[in-house]
Length: 355
Image (cartoon, rainbow, N blue to C red; front, side, top):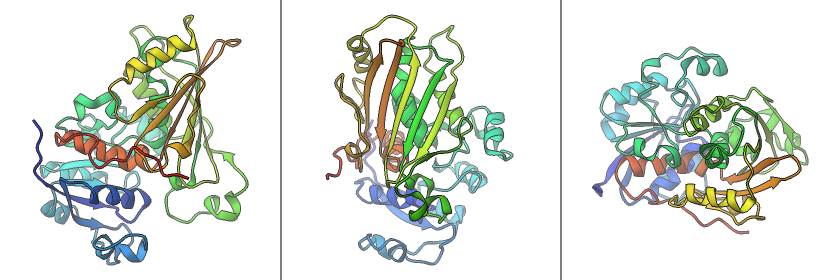
């Protein structure tokens, strides 16, 4: 049953890139009304003074304090656009108040609390709610997201890698214990806070790898690909190497895996086509075509292309997403649409900006 009644929404952390992008999408939604916005370090400021591109009435919104009780009084849905640990306790408080909670951080993505504490080097203060939160990747967890009140939005890198490899893992096509994912990300993924590594003169005309084989998004990839692997397959292990490139938006992930059975590119393409046949935001390119970040900029799409290294017996899957939309804010809105029983494509763009 579709509930077309309007719902109110509060955005806590509205002054960051993810928060303001979510606000932009939500403002065009026919069933959502933004009733409260809070800033982590910018309470009291108008959004228009932080982001001059915003028109009224968005520009006139005055950011409030990070007050979950006030937000819960004013809104049905609480969207937390904050870094890990910044709102862990507030999210659980909002959930206990009967609100729908959407988390942009990593706090409730990982079902193994030890993995979370190891990779993030913090103690989880709400471990009993880790199993309550649904991992918000509709392509794998649509049924769980329907009606859910606690949604953990996936990381941007995991979204691109998981979608690139899930059909191959589910079909038993590849060795699951020796996957390599090489990802290139635009600098907006590092957030708005100034840092030397994202300074223009440090970043432009160069790119570099970072957090090699120890990036915090790695266990998400292992966890979620593990949910679709065939019985008897080896535990999923992804060697993940991210890179920062001198562009603003976009992630391009190139994933390599050893084939476990003989197959042609056409046969593998058919498996991918069947897996994503009903997915509104996954576009499978024809064999020989390769995704580009510019083709998905400004959209909630993930483009996927596949190829084979016949000599080495390897599948090569390439995916492209806009890290701020399909990799974050758009994914959150897609999950909200599903949780509320609305058409999941509502207010989500599918046509890229060009040029």
